[in-house]
Image 1 (cartoon, one colour):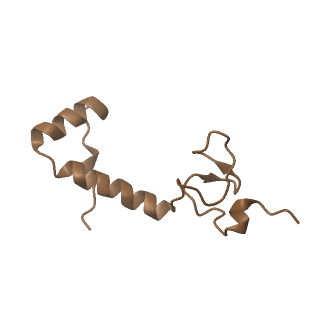
Image 2: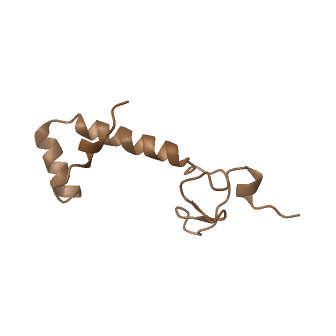
Length: 84
């Protein structure tokens, strides 16, 4: 019996990019191939995003403002970062 790679690896529904157990939002083919370099749980994704925001929050004010204006339309999302 054929089993999709995500089912063989037991990751169905665990990867943040996984849709409907077989579709991948990251891969160009759109097909989940099981374990890949992009695999992250939703928790790991949130932790990584929070770490990036904390890093941005640690920059000098002038640099933070430049990044906010350039990439976030003036918004500073790192102000919502959660300290570990």
